[in-house]
Length: 347
Ligand code: 1HN
Image (tube, rainbow, N blue to C red):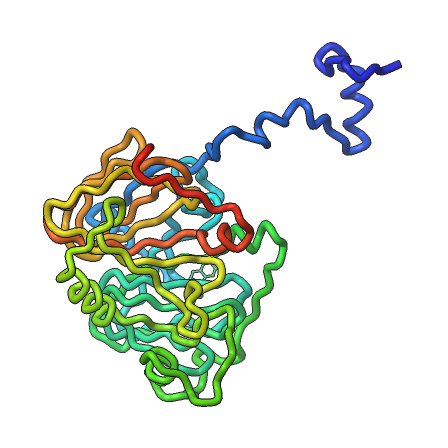
């Protein structure tokens, strides 16, 4: 007879009984589930663009964008190798598209962001509308929208892809299909969505509050100008400098329901107070140089570098010159379900 207080390590015969029935004792694993703090396998890490660029360019000798469908080097968190993720909940990669190449049209339930790292003049088409992309632009391809890319410029173009792949995988809601042609036929004129929905106005009879922004390119020229104008007020947040989040203009919520995105300005010499939050965050350096202390690590960064701050690991940034950082995380998901936490200045 098994009593309630019997130790399974004292009763291997009991475990032998559980195993073929696909049962397992919670009490052996409970401390690893109800953890005191969100300690995961996700590690702080930095990819210096100078180390990665040549290797990325070599991929163009091995495979075309069309053959690869997407020629992307996955930024794999060193604590989670082989699991194609940059944080526990998000995917990130660097995508290369050479002059004249096309990445064929498809759609999937995973939502994607592109953050343009190098080059300009390639387009992404989303549900029939093309947007031409420049460095620092933030572009979205919402869940289940047709999208393809083409580089009509004479230079290689590199962007960071950020996708909610692990979230969709956890929910087992992954679907994908290919478009019958390589490129989508032209639909709305280029730039239409940005001007129609992203000029601080909306079409007169349009009162929808969709979960996804109709604006799918947030150009860097506008973002940078906003930060530059706002800096004149010198209202610096001790933890963030001057930080804006990208929103869906219909709702004021994040541009994408699963991924929150931000751009922040840190003026030369600014040192942020320690900050931590429950959303592991990926940073991409747009301008300037500086250092970030992430837990026990110190990362020295410059333009185009990418670094990861895991959940609940304290971060402090220090700008050696005027610096602009793009960042993204799963914060909207955590906020939606009441999980999100932050700790300002105490970590
Ligand atoms: C994808 O469709 C793109 O459309 C980039 O550019 C990266 C990673 C996994 C699955 C689909 C793209 C992707 C992806």
